[in-house]
Image 1: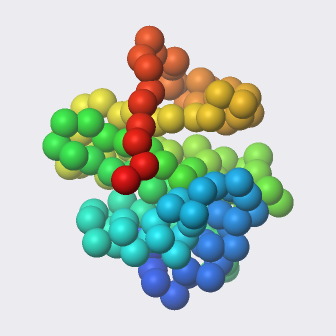
Image 2: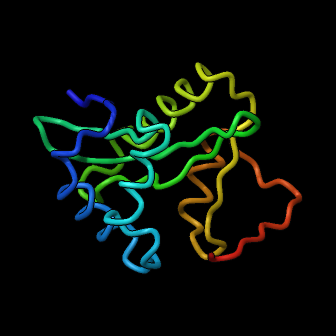
Length: 137
């Protein structure tokens, strides 16, 4: 049985390996060694892990700033896909955000990641007429 639970620090190596597999081209500031400690410092309960028999199969990271919620780092091990893990992770993160008072959730998908865009559309998310902008500090 798959359980969705808050991240535990003993899971770092498995989450790091999962993210390296699923996000091989992520920039260094998105690697587990940077992102996980930053997340644990703020809303640590919004880093969720899907596990079965003590092994990490997936993750999702969420954030809430009091105005909007965000979803980040949805990852499911390639060998565990198609079993509803991503769906369970997303709905768990949405419930956690709702419990905090969040009424609107945003996410970003790379425009080249058609599979991810199709998944999010299936989950009820839609492309909004926005321009996403960012700046590395």
